Image 1 (tube, helix red, strand yellow):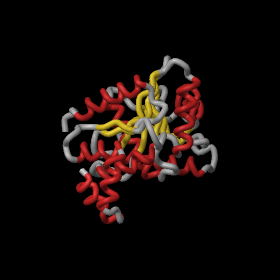
Image 2 (cartoon, one colour):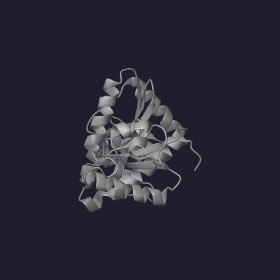
Image 3 (tube, helix red, strand yellow):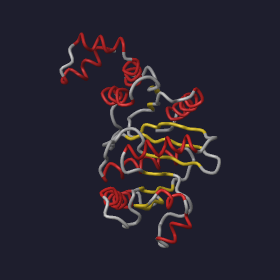
Length: 249
């Protein structure tokens, strides 16, 4: 394994000895190499250490799927009254409109695979142009890109979080909104908003089942969990990774 890793990283200045040392002590690196070389069909990791440290090894060894330009993390919460997905919760500090459009479509595709019909809301502190915020402008650009690339996806924005979840309020403000019912895919303008919203919902909602994070954009069934992952979540994600690995090409 270490020779393959060295071949991948020699242009980055990693020596053979450094490659040997890394391959002995980095479990995520070992697992990623197993997936790359066909000795494993998928991987979950991340319960110890920082998310971006694990992502670095996944990116070095496995990389992005063809056509993907960015990674993103999506979390799903099964609440008493609703099921809601949030993206991006862990990866992109300040994504561009292009990146937001890409991972919104990727998140919707992941939801479709799980038999969840995506209804996407692009969130901002601006509500359909009510404020001249940078996030609002970015989300409007993202909406235009999404509409062009995925015309059948039910999506609208930019909007406040309450408008995303409350159809009656949304229709008062924008009766012509393309989004019907309650949104179940909440797309945040940056990783701070996504991570904060996810953790607040997970804690304040009480009884719930958290699924994820799903790593979007990666070229294999690989997902990076977090230190707060319960045994239940690890088992659920392992099962979903197995299903993903057996998905028809």
